[in-house]
Amino acid sequence: MTNYSIKTIAENYKMTAFGVPFEDFNDWAGNAAKTAARKAEITENGKLAELLALADGTEYQINYVLDGKAWRGFGVMGEFVVEGAIVLDFLAGDYIVVPGTGADKDRLADEITGKVFSGMMNEITDYKYVGPGNATFVKAADNGGFYGEMWLRAKKVEG
Image (cartoon, helix red, strand yellow):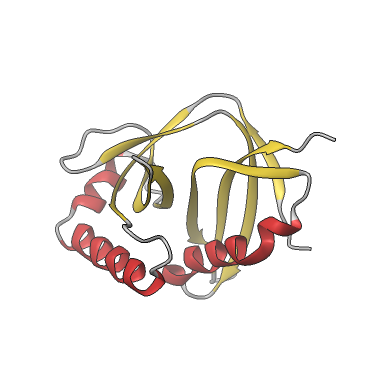
């Protein structure tokens, strides 16, 4: 069984991010390319740095359902006004928290996401992921590597 915990968030919160919608959720290579291009764009034009400076400096990789389509972006916790960014609503409630560690900061969020959606959610039988989104952060760990967590809103399964 994969390691996870349940944490309760008492109040709704917002995240501000830049991202891309996916026309075909199952186009893994195409979606990865679109996501990488968007990340490169907001890094090069300084928009991501501008957003990080307004918040606490922690960057999140965010998966969300927006207008009925899968969407992936990069942003911060909180509501901020930055040209081209959107504000996403995250709801209060229970969250499945999945930790991970690794040596590559840029790959760790994807590794955790892959672990969660490639079967781990089937192993968790007492909670069900309900969305509308999830977010993963990665930060430097004391051992010189990196530590990350993915947070997914969930409801306890009754019965």
